[in-house]
Length: 301
Image (cartoon, rainbow, N blue to C red; front, side, top):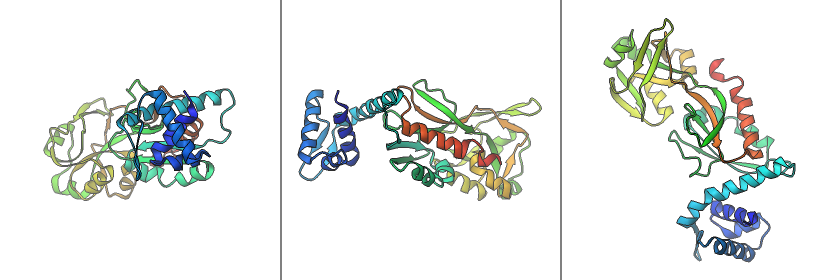
């Protein structure tokens, strides 16, 4: 399959403008249109809907787009393996990460990466909801959980230690639980989809943090709002240390059951589809994030 035509299709899908995509590749509008028409004829599918006013992806085009991106990534990786790839990493890198983590640790440093690699454009999709990497055509993602999906590969970014915490004002009002069993009588600032967590005491004792047994007075789906509500005294929260370490240092939050560790195997992973070989742009971004964040995590200082 003609990868130049695939590249044109991917650009046209991103820009929703065939002429602009053609200009990016040095093609006249008529040549770009003819080349896309030839690709559609070869595939036997209409990839783009065209009108005098706009261009949009067809249903078939949306389904084909992730595979077109993957074929281009494979070509780039293959050429790099032969020493014939681009000397300078370039192109659009689609990256997704939890919004709260990105606000704290990624957004403040991306300017350094862009200055180091001026031919890379970062397309960041930041949400505490989990995107499907393949369906969303993502090159890379951060996931803060155990890496269980066999269709994905990854590199460890950092440990993701979780704790129970609350505001002093809440504990003064409701009391401080002394055992895991006492959590059932407290208000919980819950996170959407939160699961039961095993607690392991340093003296060998075991317990459970079961959101279903506590009073779920507040459930949110955003890490920043989750922390703000906890600091304000809404209840006890299960939080990642990277999200609350400054509040713990200042005393705005204190650990609950500090002698217990959450035993869930959570790790911050940089992951990418297993079917993709690492392209230069993905490899340098992973190296950058590990250098800037993973080598000396700010929350472990």
